[in-house]
Amino acid sequence: MRIFTAALATETNTFSPICVDRRAFEESLYAPPGQHPETPTLCTAPITVGRKVCRDKGWTLIEGTAAWADPAGLINRKAYEGLRDEILDQLQAAMPVDAVVLGLHGAMVADGYIDPEGDFLTRIRTIIGPDILLCAELDPHSHLTEKRVAAADFFVVFKEFPHTDFVDRAEDLWRIAVDTLEGRVKPAMSVFDCRMIDVFPTSREPMRSFVDKLIEIEATDPDVLSLSVIHGFMAGDVPELGTKTIAVTNARPEKGAALARALGMELFAKRGTFMMPWMDEKQAVSLALGATSGPVVIADMWDNPGGGTAGDATVVLEELLARGATDVAIGMIWDPIAVQICMAAGEGAEIPLRFGAKSAPGTGNPVDGLVKVVRVQPSAEMHFGDSIAPFGDAAHIHLAGIDIVLSSVRVQSYDPSLFTALGIDPTQKRILVIKSTNHFYAAFSKIAAEILYCSAGSPYPNNPATNPYRRVRRDIWPIMADPHGTEAA
Image (cartoon, rainbow, N blue to C red; front, side, top):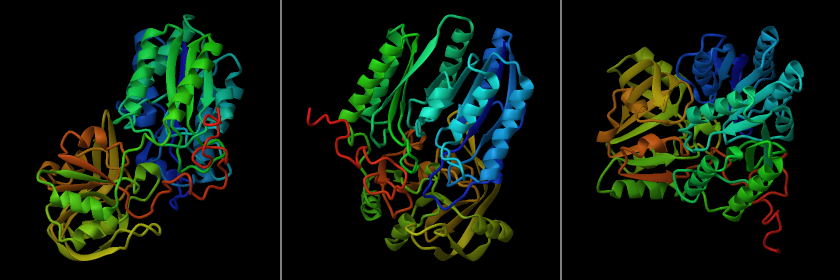
């Protein structure tokens, strides 16, 4: 067997002012054929898992380019077309192939392309023809369009949020692909549109039990090859935004359609109950200061670079400074210019510095102060499960009793190693402020005495009922109270 694999992925917040060009991919991950590292970068797990599978089977794996950019705004048209065509040319050169196995995200939007993944998959289908297997792993914070479903044989989606299972799901993707190529199964994909926009953290109920139910059905029903939920990505203003369920069965499309619908309506019945409760910055700081043990983690949940924001908001920091809080560490604030200044000053220097809140309204005010440059770290990295997340040149500064990590590459706060990389022991701090909606939970919950979810400022469109959408359909909850008519029934 000859299998082609590649990855092209990012998540587009169409409201974000930060545009994505080719350099953004190169700063996060750009790996030409054969140069992908042994560890995956979230959406590139099909490549690293595929190496092992094909090695064990004695098959030929032809690797194309792997490209991942940290989430931001609109993708530059030339950047998307260039990366797309680079991979398509590699596929064309590899023909004939028996299958194409991809790593995608599913929430890209590019200048001139409202559905880049649909465009990409359709072009691949044109090259390989109707009978060659085409499958992909997706992030659940994506948009499942009709064009994508028409082009692919099946999708497998991360089940967990935080996404701790991207390698496990890549293994599922390859298991189904191998069984298909060896004639044991004929995957049939069924999709149900839940007609809702919501957020589904699996670290709490009711989504925890729902995901466990999916896993149980997969394990006990021989007809079911895979079950997935597309959560949707509320910061993507696209026509087919919304939650959808996927059932991949062994040649049982009618059963799959009924199962996808039943699971989708179960989610719809619980709409509005999945999200963790949150508070504003004043309440979060008050509770953290009053805690009897630490560290208390304040998640600045909407200034999350993983959702496409800048990660440079200072709202929580300003509240901490106003309250005279000490023994606090903040990780991170994105400010490449401030990092450059700190690196030029050198470790131990005391300098006047203005940093933060440069990207957009609703992110607070730039902070001015006499800071001590405690440490500078070129090419800093942190862990994210089996992956490594680079955050570029970074600086650890100290201001009025608060330790702050400044980064030059936008990335959310996945893991406490972001602090240790800059010489800060997070377990010894009274308060930790991080920028992440929920991906932080798996790692930070292990050291936190308490976790507070904080909605501070307005860096992110976090209310789908009032977000200024231009393209999103109107017959979807919560824009429409009951688009399925279940209450009338």
